[in-house]
Image (cartoon, rainbow over all chains, first blue to last red; front, side):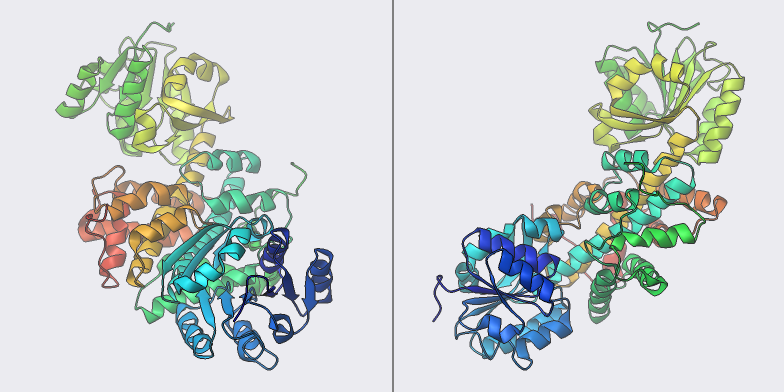
Length: 304
Length: 304
């Protein structure tokens, strides 16, 4: 049995994981942070958490393990690999998987975790690094009501809204897939449109402001295009994340026999950006491809 | 010379034109409304305007003519055709072109109107039928400052925000082109994502709500997807409008030697929807194509 006094493990301390761990600590919840990097481990200790290099060591004695690793392969490794969560988490503990993974994989891994005697929540998140750091994420979750209840204090700490799609793991990941289709297409269309506006002679800052007030606006336009205006491609979320996430979308589409022409076009542009060497830069670096392919000069960052 | 006591002609009384004419009348500005249809003429008379069938008859005695016709060909006809605005508008009157037209055409027509002794504002609008009816449109304008000044009371009546891109006609249409690229892509990606979510087994209403609060949100998602949920494809703005508007975007891209892979993919989907017989339906009818191409059942409208 577990109790709400036990710490919570956060596996993977990138932007989303670190922000969530910090939000948990702010809410008075003890955190075991886990990352392969010495720097994120030092940061989480500075915030008052305990730091670990191995997932299993972090999960020992915890009532839950929140996963914030990068992809399906890492999820598999930190759960079931040597020194993983499943061999260490106390019986009855809950695995909360916040990683964007294929819905079919979410179903599969949920079955294996539950068979091993744990709870499982399929709980992808939206809201970016800023949302994670401020405890304002959106959770798109599915899983057993008792697992949601057991995690209520943690979700209160990290999220503004927790959507419970259904009791079936997989539906949270399906919802995240729909969101990522839109988010990815909107980033690419924002880069396409802003660069076209610049090429046609318009002032980039004015184009940005007008769209923010017009029917062409999107959450991604407002969030990402300032990076282009500022000429600052420090990754908040990298190009390669969307190569992966739109890959998950297209794979799900193929499994459902569902053609996705616009998501396909958008993913190709992320692949072009990655292939051209910008994979680790901010996803708004797709604008550099549009600029290179049209002899357009992007802002040099001195405007603002 | 013209005076602010003279009426204003509104040429073309579709959703945008009628809403704008009504907003002008509400602000105490006399309106000469012009449309080929008897029904919009009767509606504008019921609102307190005078109705005309010919553009020139409407423009006679007016200080300005606002154009809300459908496309470049109609703009050409109502301005320069027989019985058109240019032969009837008093000298010094202002042509305010709110039609979405190619930027190069906007420049060309501005030159001819100005050479004929009139003012010209390149003034495309955004905000949809609702924005027009409530006087809350966004104007993306360019042209001579004195023409903007002369039209200040009219813009106050129809728009919440008037962006003056520059003194050069053409820049307003360039800004609108950027907006329409985004708007068109966002409508198609919304239809693609919502239908994929439904196909994967999620509740359409829940998908709608979650995206409204997530990073995948767009203005178009919030505005158009309720039509799909309600199974109501009464045209607020028709599929064929976006076949035209994204055609303008692609033509401008070609003229600038600027590749537009995502806008191209989106326009193809509007063309598919039009080719399949939905051209006069609401632009959200693109969802029907995704549904047909994936054997997905869209909401029947009984959910809400």
